[in-house]
Length: 450
View 1 (spheres, rainbow, N blue to C red):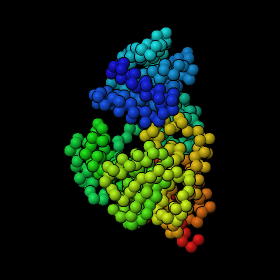
View 2 (view 1 turned 60 degrees about the vertical axis):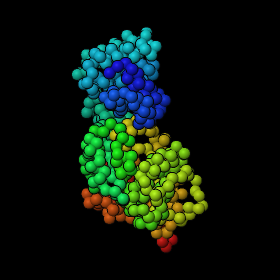
View 3 (view 1 turned 135 degrees about the vertical axis):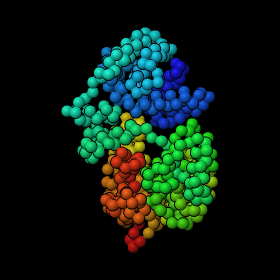
View 4 (view 1 turned 30 degrees about the horizontal axis):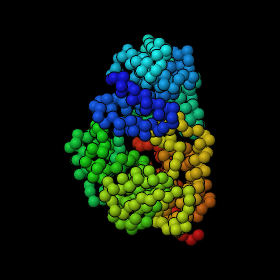
């Protein structure tokens, strides 16, 4: 790979690490500018950017062992050049280490750091010589060992060991690091999954059955999702199985009026509309025009006519919504710990203080959501996190404050997910323990005789 593609990689890593952009957004934006490049080069860029971000904590630990200047004290351009080079040397066999080192030195010089090219060369050559003898924390320091091995902030590892135990924590951490194919939901109304699958296979896509739901599939081996016929004809929607289970648990009855308060990009709203089989109405809401436009794009592609999107703030209650909906979905903003496998930089961005703010935000949204549900109607509360404060503790708080009761999820779940807390009305899915992302779902029914 050339210095040019590595310069593109550096620009994306600078956006992620120095400007605070989400990795999936920065990478997607970078790729959109480079559609003219061969597939191999774009795949290289994606892997290096994703991998360097995913393993950043371990990479910094390695660099600090061989550098006289600690990573956090380095100039931003230099530390990100070193990070991407160490990732390639440690986790990629396609390029010789010496070539990785030479390209990193060239890039430092090209970026105006001629006086630091010797420093870059020295650090990387030192790591290259000692790659097989790297030292990591031992099992006598279990939190540090897991933190560095799986590149997870120490405070999160310590917390999860306390909540879930050492064994489950390591299973989750290992699962975050696994490569995962794209998961798609095949639309069921006015089409068939057989048609969608056949079309994808004819375009050379590898299609495999996903767990739990017969309309969920893993797809891989494609270059660009919008180029797939089944995608642009609305037969498939990218969506994790955990997110599809929200639609199963919601189980909207035909003719229902449903509100999705925080809907972008619209996968769950579209699933509800599909389940209504052309009846009823789904109102998919979100805060900004940008997010609403994302929903509208997906609605237009789906061809479904019983769903529309509108801009509306979930924190501002509209009196017109009072007791209006048969079903309300509150898939609230959250810490996102359950989807670290997809959005690797979440783990570096979240703090306990931000979590506390999120819990307050979630409760304000739940307060408004409760008022939208008609007596006998259903509120689905969901998050993509594994944090009890945002999940079961919020549900307990809600049931103490509002005239709702939790309803067993067993009738709505595949057999292997039934039992346990599902009987009590909520389900915590854990990455690596369950065959999907980490997710929380609760089904809450408003009492008729309040």
